[in-house]
Length: 364
Image (tube, rainbow, N blue to C red; front, top):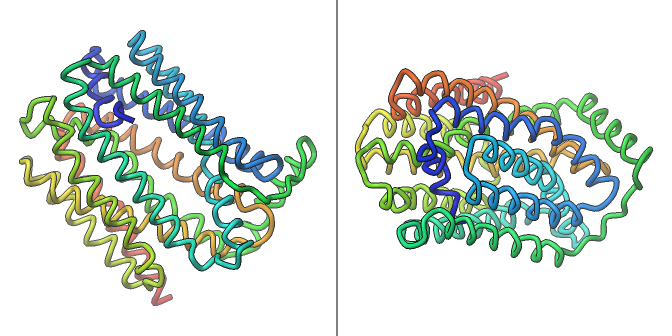
């Protein structure tokens, strides 16, 4: 989606303040909070593939609104539609992939397959980032938006080709029973609860910061048309993190804690640097956080048993969205008083705390 690297610039150019931009991100995450778990239960009860092709159509409609009638209200509507899209696919995708692999006797390949899938997606983001600058220069935001809508349509068409052997439990009572069963599994199994908590602890902060990277890059003094090019190294490192997930699947607690700590230090140093070179350190940090994100998802999938896989994966995503809302709120407040680089540096602190908790858990 060519809009991805420049939509924060679109918001700023329309006249929105940092606080207003952050409020849009909060609305985006709040939509996920409200729909995340119900949509996961729906995927378990009806069809995961259905949700995977329906979601991109809603996202494309939101992007069209942004460029056709740009305003705070249409940006909010677009984020609501994008939030619905995310809720529909979150949980459903992981459950479909894991169970189709399990059916083939290849569940042990989940980390490698999902890591490669993330990498392909991130290569697509890099391609969009490289194209966004020249397309923006030639056709402005309408051309970037049209390309993004087309990408959503292609995404929906691709999702219709996914294999699915999942047996739906049916709507109505089946949906409610699936939801209750999945939550009961989390209450009974301490290892599942720990894995559910690890996902938002690893994913939320850097996932929220990603929405502000274009503003961070603009702050170091480059022209808007060059912003996508400085974002490209971030996605190179994120892609590398995804590709390393298979090799790092068996990383122990100490190694996982070290990964988070080193990435946090790189994030703090890169944010505080205030130069284009600092963006390289932020890129390394994001690569480490992406690797940790995939590993946290793998550990969750390995601990889930029974038919509520999409439901429990959506519970983890719900936690991520809830924490993300807090990060957006904090960024809105801090970004009004401090430079973007300073806020990025401060956001390294939660990862240092998480690394300490993981390391202490090993001794426990």
